[in-house]
Image 1 (cartoon, chains in turn red, brown):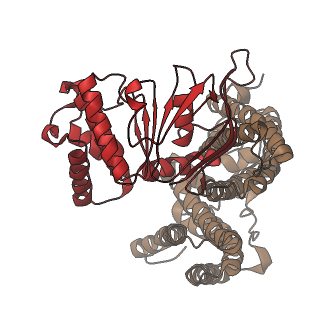
Image 2 (tube, rainbow over the protein chains, first blue to last red; image 1 turned 180 degrees about the horizontal axis):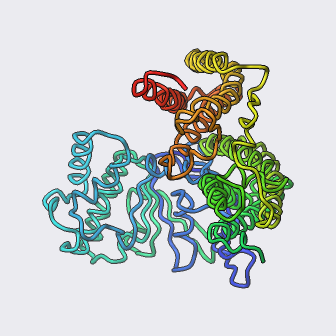
Length: 225
Length: 322
């Protein structure tokens, strides 16, 4: 899962007085199986970059190629297929369906995939085990603690077995113990060969053994590595 | 202002057409920009804006076309209702002939709907690919359709503003030539020959679809649609009305005949459209759509069955043909 980013710019509200340049000429190369951390203060462009790599948004100009596929120009239909097949995203606010159980949240991702129910249940069970949340499978998400919600979000992100894991401020709402637990899960995913990009300003991520690079972002540009 | 323009159906129809035309006009302007500046291989800000705009504008065109599909039967319903206001008119046939704009307008609407359907096919093939391979083709195609749409819009206005409620018009019996015994069939056909031709062309069309012969499918579809028009007006219609001298394509759209005309003409139009559509997909885009062919065969089969059923039921009930 090699990622190539060339001269990527992202301007919000382009052509209006409120125009904001979120990313400025970003160039980046990420190897297959590499774990990297994008660090920087709020507004530095980390989340914008993640959303472009995830195919959730398109750049204003430039190229993003993931595994040979030109993501930055994918029509919406194909961008959805790319996300469903290749990317698992873990959001800061989890983005879970509160009224559904953990199992249902994880399973929901696979419903449009066309797998039969037995396969879906098997993949769900495997993913929940990987995220250490199997014991809460039938519990409604609204009754979970912050750490448990995060593990549910991890299980959901992993259930379709993506090669690329993107985490946007994954520990911002967690205490230290849950943050360490999250890092442990991330480590095991890295050992499984997943390519991992974490956008965070949590200092816990800066000295992890499995993280090859910490890329500092500032005002939409890449600073030092 | 004349009574026609104050009719509820005409007000709704003209307002809808105006709003849709405005949307299409905006789409047209954006499409011209796309045609001028599009370069998929560029990674510039301008190209990214064009890609976003293209998606928006194609979505607008898509929904407007879907609404236009609904507006065609509504137009027919509207002119049929206007027959109450125009002296001499018994159905839409008289109303459409109320001035010189009616017939060209109706024919243009059918052509536009057909071309729009083809545009939807090209659009879906283009959106199914990752690199917009047919964007320029479908944009030029839309420009062409837009020219027709502009003509249609002008004809809409001219037609409805030039219907005189004080001048009597002819009823369908006069228009379709039964009074005085005139034969309205083309190429010197009589009814038995017309029926033989109708069923033979249906068979040919079915075989062409099943054999994946795209060119033959297109030719057979056009021939079958033309002969079907005459078969419905001059044969099947008389069994719907149960009156041999009543030969009209419009009266069967009325409540007196349970609006069966919408089903008859709808099945024919859609069946022929999907046949041609599947043939074009196969011939130009090398896509063999079994679903489209199946839909076409079902619709055409239902059309032939439904039309023939009127004759069979009449014969069973009365022991004679009309």
